[in-house]
Image 1 (cartoon, helix red, strand yellow):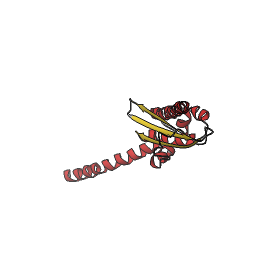
Image 2 (cartoon, helix red, strand yellow):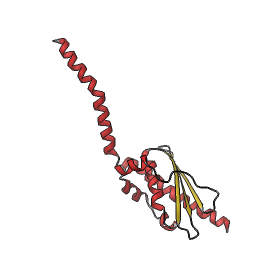
Image 3 (tube, helix red, strand yellow):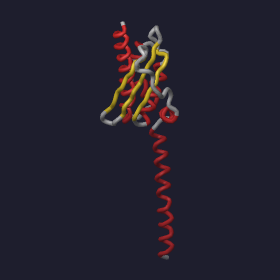
Image 4 (cartoon, helix red, strand yellow):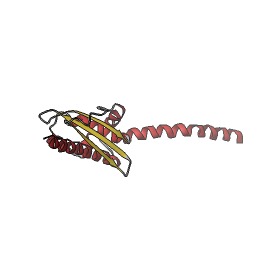
Length: 158
């Protein structure tokens, strides 16, 4: 009788890791929206542009609290319209997704239009959970920093 009890307990214990693992995966899927997962797994516009190009602005921002660092670059044409954007991000999946989405969002916009983008737009589109809103704020700051760098560069060229 004692042996059958131990066999049952043993078989139950063997199932615990699988149960915990499957619950963890389900939890993560519920925590992040499919748009975050898509931009994380298939990031758009990863890379760098030539920072010495007079039509390229670079924004480098970081969040000391979480350790995320984001570099976002924009290239404009002669009319001031953003024709290309690139990013490199060291951080969590939400930071990478926010960067990726931001580069898509600003393409085709003027500097003024891009400067009006708010973190709320990015967070709402990606359905970021409240604990990850700082990632969308970082993306907004990176856009503004890139615009500021470009404007400074263009004033120096005149």
